[in-house]
Amino acid sequence: ATASAYGVPSYVFMHVPPKCFNDAVAEFSSDHFSPFEIPEGRGFGYAGEYFPERCTFDFDGSLFALLKEIGVKAVFAGHVHKNSYSVPWQGVRLCYGLKTGEYDSHLKDRLGGTEILISADGSFTHRHVTVSSGHDGK
Image 1 (cartoon, rainbow, N blue to C red):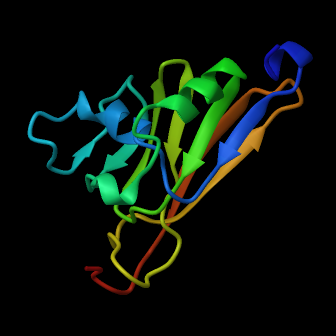
Image 2 (cartoon, rainbow, N blue to C red):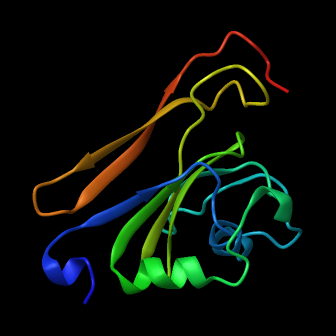
Protein backbone atom coordinates (compact mmCIF):
# COMPACT_ATOMS: atom_id res chain seq x y z
CA ALA A 1 0.00 0.00 0.00
CA THR A 2 1.17 3.54 -0.63
CA ALA A 3 1.25 6.45 1.78
CA SER A 4 -1.46 8.12 -0.29
CA ALA A 5 -3.60 4.95 0.04
CA TYR A 6 -3.66 5.65 3.76
CA GLY A 7 -4.63 9.27 3.15
CA VAL A 8 -1.28 10.62 4.28
CA PRO A 9 0.29 13.04 1.78
CA SER A 10 4.06 12.86 1.87
CA TYR A 11 6.86 15.21 0.92
CA VAL A 12 10.62 14.62 1.04
CA PHE A 13 13.17 17.28 2.00
CA MET A 14 16.88 16.68 1.45
CA HIS A 15 19.98 18.73 0.90
CA VAL A 16 21.65 16.88 -2.00
CA PRO A 17 19.26 16.15 -4.87
CA PRO A 18 18.99 12.71 -6.46
CA LYS A 19 19.98 12.31 -10.12
CA CYS A 20 16.35 12.62 -11.28
CA PHE A 21 16.65 16.41 -10.82
CA ASN A 22 19.27 16.52 -13.61
CA ASP A 23 17.19 14.15 -15.73
CA ALA A 24 14.07 16.29 -15.33
CA VAL A 25 15.66 19.46 -16.72
CA ALA A 26 17.98 17.84 -19.29
CA GLU A 27 15.19 17.80 -21.86
CA PHE A 28 15.07 21.62 -21.78
CA SER A 29 18.74 22.09 -22.69
CA SER A 30 20.62 20.82 -25.70
CA ASP A 31 24.14 21.69 -24.51
CA HIS A 32 23.95 20.24 -20.97
CA PHE A 33 23.84 23.02 -20.10
CA SER A 34 23.78 26.77 -20.28
CA PRO A 35 21.68 28.53 -17.64
CA PHE A 36 18.01 28.93 -18.57
CA GLU A 37 14.56 29.75 -17.23
CA ILE A 38 12.23 26.77 -17.01
CA PRO A 39 9.81 27.08 -19.95
CA GLU A 40 6.35 28.43 -19.07
CA GLY A 41 3.86 25.64 -18.62
CA ARG A 42 6.60 23.15 -17.68
CA GLY A 43 7.22 24.42 -14.15
CA PHE A 44 8.96 27.55 -12.93
CA GLY A 45 12.31 28.87 -11.84
CA TYR A 46 15.87 28.90 -13.04
CA ALA A 47 18.33 26.13 -13.90
CA GLY A 48 21.59 27.99 -13.42
CA GLU A 49 24.10 25.20 -13.02
CA TYR A 50 24.38 21.56 -14.03
CA PHE A 51 25.49 19.48 -11.10
CA PRO A 52 27.94 16.71 -11.92
CA GLU A 53 27.78 13.15 -10.62
CA ARG A 54 29.88 14.00 -7.57
CA CYS A 55 27.07 16.32 -6.42
CA THR A 56 24.21 13.82 -6.60
CA PHE A 57 23.21 10.23 -5.84
CA ASP A 58 20.62 7.57 -6.75
CA PHE A 59 22.23 6.86 -10.11
CA ASP A 60 20.11 3.74 -10.71
CA GLY A 61 16.85 5.54 -9.85
CA SER A 62 15.84 3.07 -7.14
CA LEU A 63 15.15 5.76 -4.54
CA PHE A 64 13.08 7.78 -6.99
CA ALA A 65 11.13 4.61 -7.94
CA LEU A 66 10.37 4.03 -4.25
CA LEU A 67 9.26 7.65 -3.78
CA LYS A 68 6.85 7.27 -6.71
CA GLU A 69 5.61 3.91 -5.42
CA ILE A 70 4.69 5.25 -1.99
CA GLY A 71 2.97 8.31 -3.44
CA VAL A 72 5.38 11.12 -2.54
CA LYS A 73 3.94 14.36 -3.92
CA ALA A 74 7.16 16.41 -4.04
CA VAL A 75 10.88 16.30 -3.34
CA PHE A 76 12.55 19.53 -2.16
CA ALA A 77 16.34 19.84 -2.39
CA GLY A 78 19.17 22.36 -2.47
CA HIS A 79 22.97 22.04 -2.62
CA VAL A 80 23.68 23.64 -6.02
CA HIS A 81 23.27 27.34 -5.24
CA LYS A 82 22.48 28.63 -8.71
CA ASN A 83 19.45 26.36 -9.23
CA SER A 84 15.97 27.35 -8.08
CA TYR A 85 13.38 25.49 -10.12
CA SER A 86 10.27 23.38 -9.80
CA VAL A 87 9.23 20.84 -12.42
CA PRO A 88 6.91 17.84 -12.51
CA TRP A 89 8.74 14.62 -13.31
CA GLN A 90 7.05 11.24 -13.67
CA GLY A 91 4.25 12.17 -11.30
CA VAL A 92 6.44 13.80 -8.62
CA ARG A 93 7.16 17.53 -8.33
CA LEU A 94 10.93 18.16 -8.07
CA CYS A 95 11.65 21.47 -6.34
CA TYR A 96 14.99 23.21 -5.97
CA GLY A 97 14.78 25.73 -3.13
CA LEU A 98 15.86 29.33 -3.61
CA LYS A 99 19.26 30.05 -2.00
CA THR A 100 18.88 32.07 1.19
CA GLY A 101 22.29 33.60 1.93
CA GLU A 102 25.10 35.52 0.26
CA TYR A 103 27.94 33.26 1.38
CA ASP A 104 29.56 31.00 -1.19
CA SER A 105 28.47 31.04 -4.85
CA HIS A 106 25.11 32.62 -5.62
CA LEU A 107 23.22 34.78 -8.07
CA LYS A 108 22.55 38.21 -6.56
CA ASP A 109 19.09 38.50 -8.14
CA ARG A 110 18.05 35.01 -7.02
CA LEU A 111 18.28 35.02 -3.23
CA GLY A 112 15.47 34.59 -0.75
CA GLY A 113 13.49 31.53 0.17
CA THR A 114 10.91 29.04 -1.00
CA GLU A 115 7.47 29.34 0.59
CA ILE A 116 5.51 26.07 0.78
CA LEU A 117 1.83 26.03 1.73
CA ILE A 118 0.27 22.62 2.41
CA SER A 119 -3.53 22.43 2.64
CA ALA A 120 -5.51 20.09 4.89
CA ASP A 121 -6.32 17.91 1.87
CA GLY A 122 -2.60 17.41 1.17
CA SER A 123 -2.42 19.63 -1.90
CA PHE A 124 0.31 22.23 -1.89
CA THR A 125 1.48 25.41 -3.53
CA HIS A 126 4.95 26.87 -3.48
CA ARG A 127 6.76 29.91 -4.78
CA HIS A 128 10.13 31.61 -4.57
CA VAL A 129 10.27 34.83 -2.61
CA THR A 130 13.31 36.94 -3.59
CA VAL A 131 15.17 39.61 -1.62
CA SER A 132 17.85 42.10 -2.73
CA SER A 133 21.52 41.22 -2.44
CA GLY A 134 24.32 43.70 -1.85
CA HIS A 135 27.01 41.51 -3.41
CA ASP A 136 27.75 40.25 -6.92
CA GLY A 137 28.08 36.54 -6.11
CA LYS A 138 30.64 34.22 -7.63
